Length: 126
Image (cartoon, rainbow, N blue to C red; front, side):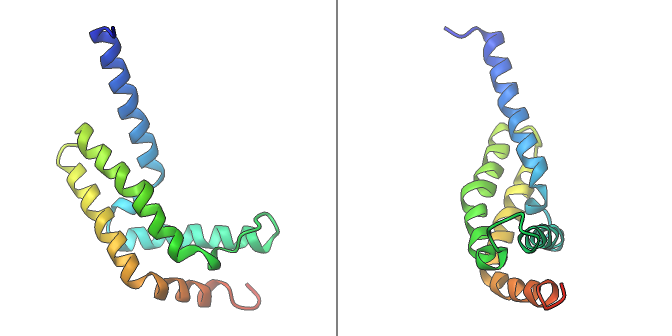
């Protein structure tokens, strides 16, 4: 049987793990323009790694669908966990709301965004 102290420590550890995970992808739970800025930076970093031979995967081939899956299987579930643990109060509602809105915006405009990224960063000479 778990003691009250051990139970408290276990819950605290879970909350800390959620916060650490969220800190790495917090841009996905903010305004669309913040998400786009950091999404573009990651795309460029991954494309440069591909061009330099440090990655076998060209992000052009998977970026749109990959982001949908990332929202569905990581971002939104994590935002829900943050809301459930209540550590951020009403801000947790905002995180989940922005994540959901960004996922929808990406679904609606992501293919266009990827085309713009390709044109901007993947032309001959880049």
